[in-house]
Length: 404
Image (cartoon, rainbow, N blue to C red; front, side, top):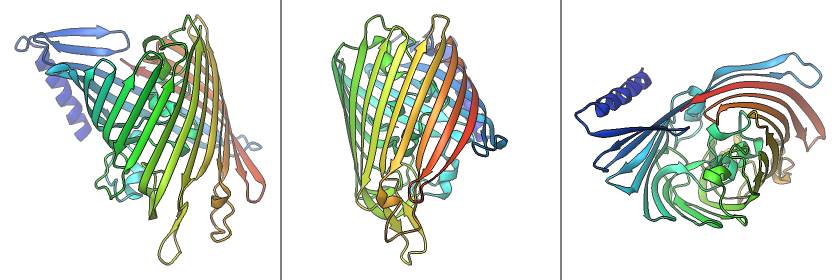
């Protein structure tokens, strides 16, 4: 009910703003939502929404093809508001989530620093003193691996890869800065380390840095931060990026995400990525690795154990967009744990697995990434490195995305 009230309030407020009492210009931009701009140029408000409706299933294994599980749900339902206040140099971004699968509902029982559902995904203020220099304060995505920074609404598969799911540093609250030119970008942040909507922070902070090199110049209209080559780059475009994150005294198994650890640990995450696009063809590669000082934490009586998935992962995606706006994409991804968390001589019960993912995706874009239909066929392979056994599953996903 409270979500309905909130949405109703936003709609009523928008309606009042558009009346003659407030002098506004109302603009619509392709795939950029509806924008209200005060004619005195003291504020602007851009509204966008999107939803992802999904049906999916996985088989019991790769020999028994009967359904082992189904997924029928609203995967994402988002409302985004952004604009400027007082001056175009002072901007803001707010993004809210309303579907259960989009609010980390289960984590409310798994983490003491995150005990409420995560409605607020982004709430950040930016100041841009120069055209290429921007400072931020608030909660938003860290400058980590490219696939995580790319919006979930701009993906060419129904979900991000298992590499991102295992190693991403996601969002956090703190200070952000970026400097971008035609051929390079430098980004950094100093944040709490506990992740989004945390109720408290310890004495350790999280430090993130990222550099990007664009040897052929900038992509068309931020095309380096959406998957697939919908811009159909007329000249070859290449971006090479590297990110580094150090989370001092991390208290969760994924740093900014995951279950509580029994002991604090220092955690380091690195990512390397490469993106190439040209006339509808897109190639993306990503490598990630996580190290930590204490990968296995345990309770005082050692009866309960919570490990950290320390290891590495690799992702490869390739796609081609036809002139009919049909796209075919292929993905291979794998994550591999270090022996310290699958064959530890002290904690013999800890046995984290290697996972591989093979995926074929077909997407029809009706209105860019805002209106699209996606179909994915996948095969998941789990490798028990300790005992040398494998188990596999087939699956399929059908998803429709609609937004403005």
